[in-house]
Amino acid sequence: MKRVNMKTMLTPDDPYPEDLQDLELSDVEILNSKVHRERDVEILRDGEIHPETEFRHEELVQELDRRDEG
Image 1 (cartoon, rainbow, N blue to C red):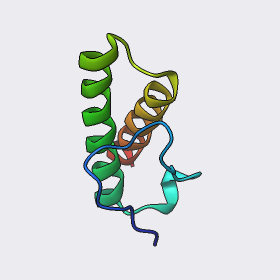
Image 2 (image 1 turned 90 degrees about the horizontal axis):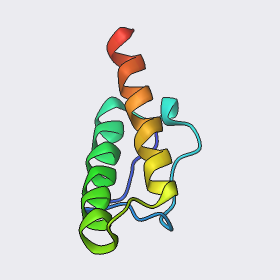
Image 3 (image 1 turned 135 degrees about the vertical axis):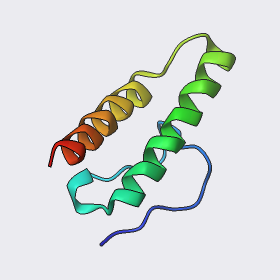
């Protein structure tokens, strides 16, 4: 399985996995946390969320929901 890097936020320019299903649950949770931190920074800094950050957030929510159902 793939591992994610250890930065605390995931900016829109940072690499992002093509398929979240290839990741361990803990890695998906880490990505989710990093995207949430990035969303918070963007809101405070820019007053809005970057579209790529929002897309990643939605994708992570869907993946976590899918795993909860399975």
